[in-house]
Image (cartoon, rainbow, N blue to C red; front, side, top):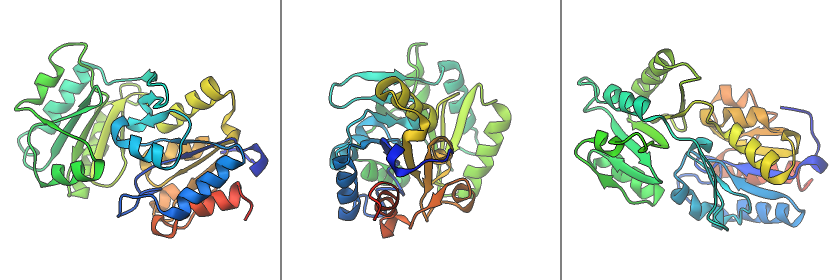
Length: 282
């Protein structure tokens, strides 16, 4: 994080879940109004999310975002206005196959739902209650396959992300720590977006690198011109990167400790409060 003032902010980047979308899975009117007011002052707006591109698309349009969507923790950057995919950093097939073997160990098989994302499509080995809830919130279709390895049959079948889901948050944390021992940061990026999601992407993939690409390559601005707002561990890098990094009030305490400012929580329209403070001066 760098020292900054409101005159320097040129790009606002927001996460979706827990940041602009709470339990209702909708963006509250006050948040939309604040974003519109920021855009009226010439601020560009973008979304950085762990969601699939097609799942993030509704929110992109709803808040009137005008820079490419940074989906899959930043592994996939695509502009809805032009259809151009500016960057795609998938997981190598060999590592993806290892991950499926790992998550399908006999003692884990009945405890985890495994999601493989390839070509912005979601593949699962079966649809259970957890997957149904995920599909409902994400608003996307799903393709069941009897063996997830079939999705990775060829070396060109590189998945964008592999996710393991479980209501057992202690198990998710145990697996997160174990995977970080098995793979170096140069081999695999391992994070959680919410406590029940363990997400793996290519090494070097995070929201900060995606924002840096959009800021420097597409907009010609620097990190000091960015206001980034997030609520969980997959937002840590972008909060640290931005000139002003804001954590939501519902973020874990150690995520909040890294931020320049802690906003009210999601149900109290924390994003609107941050925009009002750092952009609108109200």
